[in-house]
Length: 479
Image 1 (cartoon, rainbow, N blue to C red):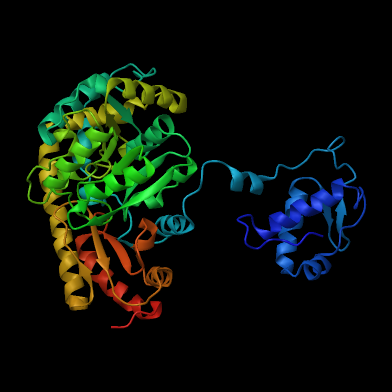
Image 2 (image 1 turned 30 degrees about the vertical axis):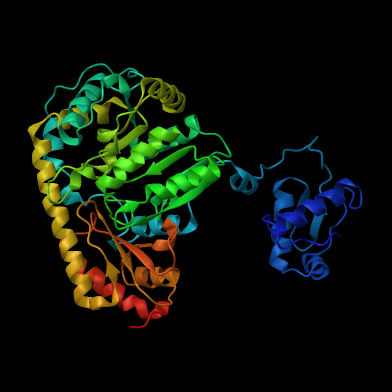
């Protein structure tokens, strides 16, 4: 039997299963014959018995063999499937689909927060007391819901797009006609539409480093080549984008310039100007993902890239997830009408357009005086949570922990010097009732963590920091 290659990307059990199936097809093991026992084949191939078990499971799922307890593994009498049904190889199908799953640690964090009562410094959503429940409930009981329940316009509800056009002019200094706006199911769907419709496998794109984009499988699922743009205290350096473009012909750049996730930084005004100039000179589209600009703690308006865009090189994405309620699932894209129509056509193929209910509610809330009051309160409350987190970390760690307090958003990016295990620290923290996000999930070097302060109650934050400190020694960190 051919020697298995442990350096291949393909798992050993799959290599063994394919080789055994080839031997069966060649007649070495005819229908009804026994395959070598798991222990015998494991010794022959110098692998663990569990690897052979997994290989035989693979063959059984494909209908090539049958497993009989106490007897062994037998080549199917009906190997060609003429007289019996074959069980789909579901494991193979789930592992080989083109759309990749979330990283295992991302799934673990989500599972822990859903199944256990933890202090949540991981989830990127607002706590219940920051959601304007009373205002939304009043709108729901106003009894003015339109009777039409058919499919909506391909771009989204017309009244909501009118309201968003006015909203962006007032709050974000962005001029956008209703026909240049596409309503999406949150910002995530907007990003998927852009990647699927405007890029091809093998295209080179630039993303911030660190960046939440590293935790998203959509770029790899689409076969894109991603190149990092390091983030410092003023955001990315546009000259590094110029260098990447010279080397790799960057097709598109994805940025979160306003209270960046995970670092909380704000791209400087000078760098915004230079970035837009480079974009126009080289024809590089910029995808501006902007969930946080309205959360500026000072109330000072943030200069979005789209508001400064004089050449139409920016596609602007935003949502109500981080500023109103994640469950509304209301996001939008602003861009040239040809692009918006292409993305709208794809969205129609996915879901026949967004549900009228959340669009109606979002329209009413954005147009009401309550929205202004809600944003003012949200800024104050997030600033208080951020201050409490900063105070608790300084009180507990002094200068042993490094961070720069953000001026908006919901994330605090921290560096703990030393040699310690992020995964072990997370496991120990979960045991103590706390969850956060390790920095390597954002493409960062070892030693970083992201604390998100939008979900936890302010009175929970000192306890969260205390639990984090208690978990640290077990990770290998020492002060």
